[in-house]
Amino acid sequence: MKYLQYPYEGTCNTILKLSKTLKRPMFYFIIAIPFLLVILRLLLTNIVVPHFKKKEQIKQLSQRADWPSIEEKTDILEAVYKKVHAKSSSIRYRFLHLIQNKEFIYGEIDFLSFYTILERTSPSTKDVFYDLGSGSGRAVLSAIVFFNVRKAIGIELLPPLYEQSKKTIQRFKQDNAEKEYLPQIERTQFINDSFLHYDFSDADIVYVAATCLSDTSWNDLISKMARLKPGSRIIVTTKTIEHEQFESIYQSVELMSWGLCPIRVYKIKQVPV
Image (cartoon, rainbow, N blue to C red; front, side):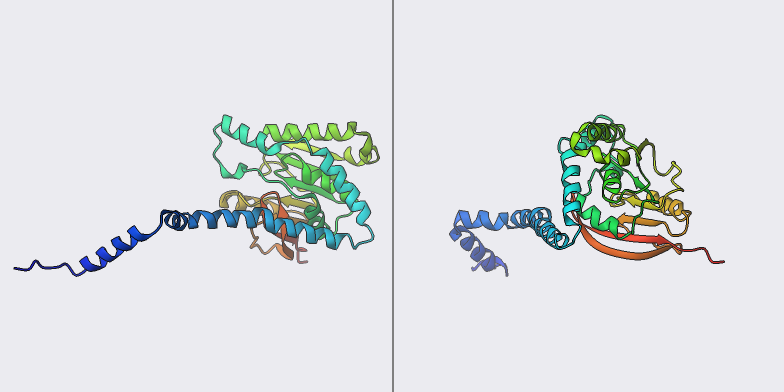
């Protein structure tokens, strides 16, 4: 009497035979493919693409008549922040205080990228600049050094980052190479507070790294920024603003410390008479 054969028995036996004939290195390679793809993506997004973006950025700016001045100011800012380790300070503080809120994840501007972004707002010596969540103060110093705005103010809630921004200003003042910028640096200010609580209604230009902000915080901030005076410009990373008071005037993808990032610039509309 013949035993009944399951319909998939032959297929299973074939697969088993094939698996035994596969060489182990090939088997391990197949298993590793997903991990290799993840690593390749990280290399492309965090190293390769930013490298070529930076190269193209320098190529374009170097064709301008004011490039020597831009390059000099960039070098000064890079030198000042060479020994500033704001990211590690942020991570350590959040770890010690058990802060898991993703809104406090730290990221930094790239000086040349921020120059090109801020230029889109047509800054003048009459403008007051605010950085909401200013970290170690890179954007604040950029606004002062690059564009000599009337005042540059950073609002930062985490104490170690606030302290680092103040120490950076002191280091800037002590460096002989930057003495010519001292009058401008005196017009910077850092505030240890939440930008949702602090009154920044005198702002002409606002920068907010909104990438990690929660929907609740972002909507609250939009409502607050909507009350800024007409003509005020707002620079935003990643997020969009859908509000009748905001007019979109520029958008692009720019280089930040965490890679390429969508940037949008808005303008507060004039109030109808």
